Length: 377
Image 1 (cartoon, one colour):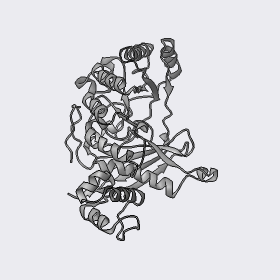
Image 2 (image 1 turned 90 degrees about the horizontal axis):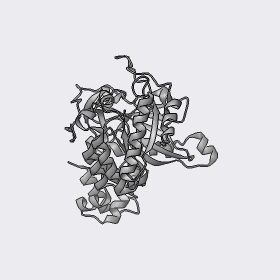
Image 3 (image 1 turned 30 degrees about the horizontal axis):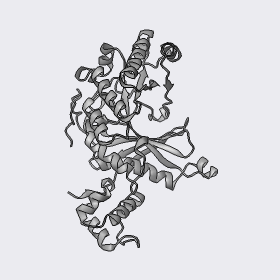
Image 4 (image 1 turned 60 degrees about the vertical axis):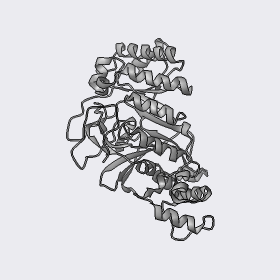
């Protein structure tokens, strides 16, 4: 099988083609800048090396199906069609510093974990994404930023760039962890996308083995954990993964990550009216955060997320946004736990947290979670 060159590291390419690693770095850089391997060799790359790379590999592509820019904020959602016809969604997120963007990427077609408040969870699992399909999402967004930067940045003389990556698009990253890790290594390679691993965050609904693998292989990467609820019975109703891997087990793995890296995990909590927004829910959440800090020496960064509607016309929206955000925060603060409220943009184009979804081309796969890698295509 030919190498997908946009997901091949320079040392891998050098070994596979028996070429000098300097030439390999330049070829990788060329692929990431142009999206192809030219017929004629640039002056900086030996022709024999380029011919060897062309013989050993190729540059597969994903097709832009649609692009939707929010009318209310600078978020942009992309739908990419994969070679087998499946469609995934990716979001370009503006950061506070002008010209810096993060890319929220998908790691699977659909998702098996069936979190009740997530549109992707309604899809079931199609398949895992290959490393190049993950990398290509970021490369394509970067390519557009370079070719067609936002007018406001042009006027200000600011050059845009992809500063970070967030694995919180379609799919459970920890269920495709080996491919995700390979993609992260390529993204952070200086001759490829050159994104600092410390600006890459991998979020999980709760697969402890994946968390430990992430720690072992790419400890610089940040960790995010979706909580749903701090009360086990309520969490299981919202997130079926609780039945296979109770939250205590997930937090133990997250604690290992925090102790080893010295970095606080991000805890994400989506507020749902009448489901997890009562004072007793806030008390349980505060106790959980304080216990984690006491046990592992790192205070988690707690992010409250307003619920974003996921009605798709086929089924009614099961939840409503909470009206108790400030009251909920007050209870947390009263127990010594500070929070941030995550601005989840692009809601008018279905780009906000929990809204990413596309119809599968075939029947959904298994919906109940297991702590192992689902079957690839």
